[in-house]
Amino acid sequence: MKEFLMAPGFISPYGTFGADLSSVFAWIFTLLFLYGWQLAKKGKGQKHHLVTLWGMVAMIAYFTAYYLARSLGALSLEGKEGFGGPEWLYDKVFSPILTIHVTAVSLGLILAVYMIILGFRASFIKDRERFLTASPLKMDETWVKYTLYGAAILFGLAAFLRGGPYQRYMVYLSGFLIVALVVLGEKGLEKWMPDGGTRHRKIGAFTMSLYVIALFTSTITYVMLYYLYPAKQILQ
Ligand code: HEM
Image (cartoon, rainbow, N blue to C red):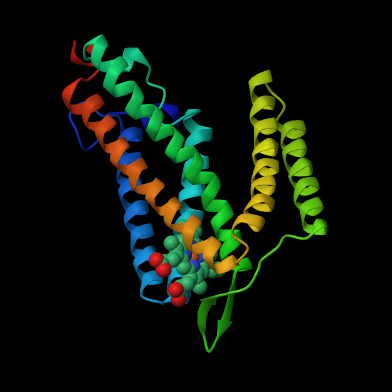
């Protein structure tokens, strides 16, 4: 699988198949989410729900498969060897853009799961259309416990079954800590923004903006890596 992803790409003369596939999917997923956002703005809650839900599920599935196959995204950890431009450009431009990209993608993936759950919690169906509630939305103590125990069992089981190097255990521990942090964040948000519908709209707009930032920064890094400054060993 790794060899397949490292095979020559189909967009630029120097890109790998994995990097090109990721770029195409990044465009498809982002355009799909922007379309979902437009649907919500027009008050088409049910269509918005279907487009964003399945778009997010497909994106998370693709990202997980890619992560398992290649350990990390094509653009994210090429390191200095993957960049054929001058060192100052790497330090002052490429590296900061890549950091923004990785941060936006990581936060975006966490928020994707959070937003899907919030979407169901904060909406209701009437006459085949979906609407956001306009009332306080709280996660009660039982659900806090279920979520934390559930995450501990899930990540604990994954660590037990897959085993492996110490770093892999750290990934599962981070997974559990992220869930705990999101629950803690939600409890804070309940006080600051009690209305469930408002919370969905505000955090939803922030999430959508993150995807636009992720696409913009990934396109810049792609152009730099595979058009302008390909790795020196590729050019030889
Ligand atoms: C990652 C997933 C999601 C994101 C980023 C997201 C984002 C948004 C945003 C930004 C809005 C407000 C649009 C505006 O008025 O400007 C909105 C509205 C809405 N969302 Fe979501 N959403 C997501 C998933 C869901 C899901 C899964 C559901 C239902 C289960 C849902 C139900 C709704 C409804 C009913 C509205 C109100 C539409 C209206 O104004 O009539 N959303 N969403």
